[in-house]
Length: 233
Ligand SMILES: [Zn+2]
Image (cartoon, rainbow, N blue to C red; front, top):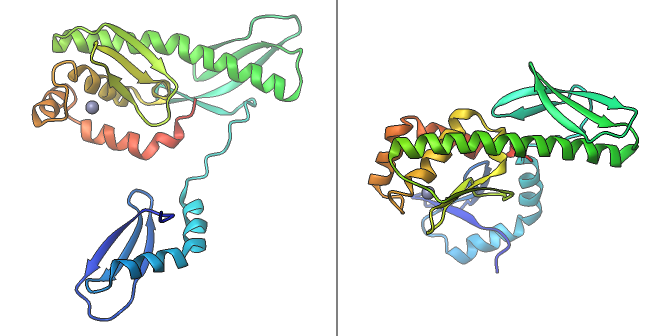
């Protein structure tokens, strides 16, 4: 098994010379003259393994780990909110709410270090999920009535790569990371899944239906592709 997957672009050059590059979207690209055998390309890639690993690591946007400290920015439906910590000296159930452009977090100040961080993190997650499901459901109800279809159930899942899905039994599932994405991007994912209740494929008729409700769907799809690393819950 080769250790890397790569795309080969052939040129009409007669001279030897294979070059390697790493693109954020295309991944590893090898340029080689048309006459160079595939095996030679593979050996070349294997020889450059260290260089590739080093550069692949660099190209991943370094997303700072959330620290759950006061002033830290948290995304909620595309808006940034500054975290405001409101410690309580008596035991309370920790809870988050949005006040203006701030995310207020009330919590019992009885824990230290990582346990305290965990408490804050869980309260934010609970807030995201509890309010997020309501907002997503309203959007799904709106677009399914516009399109004239019915779904059976809505589910929010913790998944890494899929934004949404539509099951054979008309159950719609959405990635919980969408709660951090801008409204128009969330709308696109919802329109996409609701449109699958009509066309269970990605045919031109399917995309035509999506475009009718989201004329800028290409831009929104691209946004997800480029920014998915910003969304982490
Ligand atoms: Zn689809």
